[in-house]
Image (cartoon, rainbow, N blue to C red; front, top):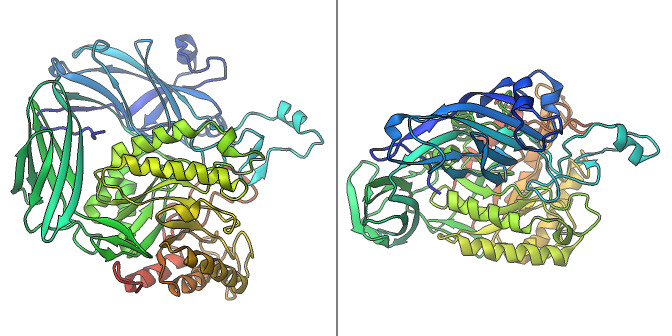
Length: 601
């Protein structure tokens, strides 16, 4: 799917700004009731989550449908062009109505969807755009919600003898199987864009290297009649290769490779024309490969220095904020990091563009988090998620396949692979093959394993890269760093025998900013820094460990509960991006660790 860009043949109309909004009371079920909406209408900002924009608990705690609307006038000069309405992300389910008629539906809250407006909307005319949004999570959504009355990190039983009685008088709530707040709404931008009626629908770029030459295999998908011509432009705008046809191979002599920062993340542009249409797709010439215990970028052993992140900020919630993205990219550089994981969902496309430009490596993750947490039954047989999971992976790869910053796909975060090991293996290995089959660049594929009985886990060891989340010294062996290091060392002995590269994709300790102790204990900044120092010493001993991603980049919001004081406090930075002591520790550590060749095989 092509990102909407304005050029000499295409126009983009932003619909971001102030919309009308109201919460459903459970009586409308996602259908449009104009009398209901007009009697409860409030203003809301788009893009942003609706939860924290109003100082009213109803917005924070809302469960179910909500309604957005605004009037839109399509400029008259769009006349004669194909019109497309695009939503970058609506969380989690959306129904789109135009002038009261259902125009389209979409399931999934973190990837774009489009609605063709041909025959529905005419240029130069006003129309009413209404969007019904459902924030509920369940055993059929990604991320997963819990349907047994248990919230993540806490029980829904109010302490009364009868759980069923408690359910009758307690209000409905979102019960996530995940440890981040279920922010909802139109979280990313909304646009109408134009193309000619004969148009370019997709572009696929597959780079490789032959000696000093860059090899570019390309495919251009089109609709209508016309001829395809392509040019490759250097970063400086010079034509370095050109050809014709809907698919082909081009060669760039003396190609400059896309390398992670502080190397040169050099970007080329595939400039495509078809009939009366035109589109420019940036890409990088680079290779990615897993070989033995190594993860290779451009043939050199890469070491991941970075973190899991979240799209999370005050007031915006999970809403798109380009200013925060620019700030975060600056802080990634300040920390001497080189990578991050899109935990636990695909991020806004603009962040990937920044990563391409800045040379930051991405592990791109689906929103499949919470599969099986607390489940008494086999989730792979009882959760209705498989088809949706495949749809999400397909759409994720379709959106992000051309980004040189994306070097690996993560199919999920922390599924249950211990209690139903054979079902888990069957599910994840088949999904692994499916993911590989979709990616034109055939990047490595993984999922991220939770703290478990790793000997019983049959699925994690089958991935291209073993990615593990481990909290020795925090959630288990709490505060005892000697025991934590011993337990981690035992586990690493096990993974070394598997023969795969391993990334520690989560490890960390909740830390209250400004809480200092002379003797490091849990929740102090000194404990967090010492925790990382001790755990990293174990990682440094193992040449098959190819990355460290402390959890988390910055503090983030969660559902309220006795385990969470003002959210998850494991960030190296506070939620407003101020460094804790551990951030300074990692800045010093990572500045001394090279991106390439850190671990010798």
